[in-house]
Image 1 (cartoon, rainbow, N blue to C red):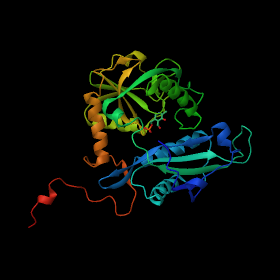
Image 2 (image 1 turned 30 degrees about the vertical axis):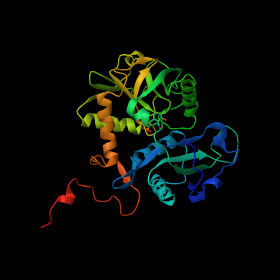
Image 3 (image 1 turned 135 degrees about the horizontal axis):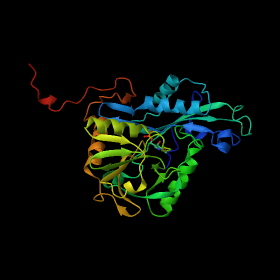
Length: 325
Ligand SMILES: Cc1ncc(COP(=O)(O)O)c(C=O)c1O
């Protein structure tokens, strides 16, 4: 995923060219990780371009700001509208959306309070994070030797740049050893999450996922999966899970904005289930993509359409063949 290097970036209320969207090297965020951000997606649906659960992402962004005592200069609703403006300004049909709020340039002590709370919105094209093959056939992962942050150290309910130092260690270790991803445990040894995605395990048709107290980022895709699974009649349990459940799982998968729903086919070189995407993972994947592809109605109101005149009328199968009176 290389950047296109073109288009407009929204910075503190103005649209600037990609090449000019710079901040000073003495900005607090560069030295102390004092940024909070979001990652959302806009999909090119048959009824128009639509952001998936944009309000939930913006709510988490402002929750993250609150945890870090940041007071954005712009209200949540205004920044949400700015996201839509930025997509329109770039004439994007589908894109990845990255709003970021960060401590800018004023002083370089650890104390962030003297530094301004700046914000920016980037959008760019970003396809399947782990590749299309991963969505279809699954990925090979390892349990990381790195743990997720202990409670009361780095708050994991905040999506802060600082937390991604830990994610980078998990990701680099996995890649250097030939795996696609790493799954981290929490500091008590229970399953937590991947470097940038939540984890689900299926056994005897019940879905299990680590709870909010297992040092996870409470993912919006995770929440969508729980909702979809319950809609489909499955039981979902959020509870502390032992590592070895991965090895005896019938199915396992990741959930996140970047990876969407990606099956896991092996952990630590132990085959998960039949070593390919399992039926429950496939069913949930299909239900998720059906909402995005317009094959199923958006009953939960998860889509925010971007352009005027959209959403277009739903495409009703066979309508063209209905004889007019
Ligand atoms: C550490 C971590 N966990 C989980 C997730 C999944 O969250 P979401 O589904 O909201 O993208 C992400 C992605 O942002 C992440 O970085």
